[in-house]
Length: 274
Image 1 (cartoon, rainbow, N blue to C red):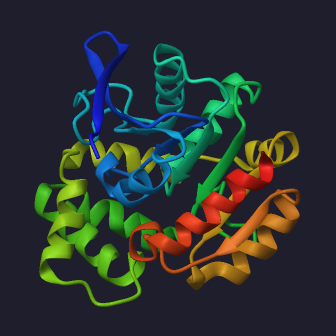
Image 2 (image 1 turned 90 degrees about the horizontal axis):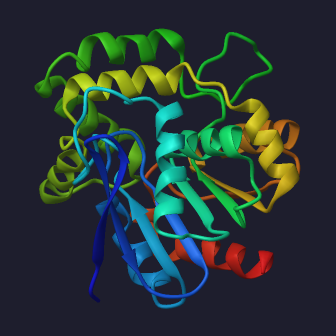
C-alpha cells in the first residue's frame, strides 16, 4: 500500500500534512489531542480499498507546521474546511477521535452540514466539563483535569508522563508492551508541551452540546464510546442527540486495540447511510 501525502496551506506559513489514498466515497479521519495521522493505520489499510481516505495532521501535530497561533479548536474547524476545499473533497464522512471530535463539531458550527454525508464521533462528550448533575457525560472531574493541566503540561517530561499514564490506564484495556507504549507517547510528542497545554485548555472549555443535537438531526451520526462510560454516555446521548446511533467498544484507543471490530462498526455505518 502506497500512502500519498499532501501539504495543504491553511494559513500564511502554516501547512497541514494529509494522508490521501484510495478512490471512492471520501472518508476523513481527524486524530485527537496531540496525536498524529499515524494512529489510524489500521483504518487506512481497511478503508482505502473501497474509499478515498484522507487523514489529517492538525496544525502543530505530526508532520504539519508547528505554529504559535491557531492552537484551538475554532481554528481547527476552519483548517478542516480549507483542507476539504483544497483537495476537492465532496460529501465526506467525517470521523473524529477524542478532541478531534471538537474539530468536527466546530466545522458544523461554522459551515453547516450541506457538504457532509455523515459524522462519526469516537469517545468524546460534546461538553468536557460541567457542574450540573444532569450533564453526566464529561471528560472528568474539574479538580482532576485542572491538576493534569497544572502538574503535567508545563514541560516535555510532564507531557510524556501524562500521556504514558493515560495510555496505560485509559486508552487500552490490556498491558502495553514497552515498544507499544513508547510509540503511543511518541505520537503525542510531535506537539510541543506549551502547545499541548493550549489545546488541552481549549478542549476542556468547549461546549458543543448544540452542535451534537444539530448534527444528529441533520445527517447520519454515530458515536463509538469506550466501555468504561458506555452506560453513562448512551443515556446522555439519548437526551442530547437522540437521533444518533451509539456503539460501545473497548477503551479510549479502541480503533487501535480492537481495530477489526471498530472497522466493522464503521463499515456498517457507511453501508447503512448509503
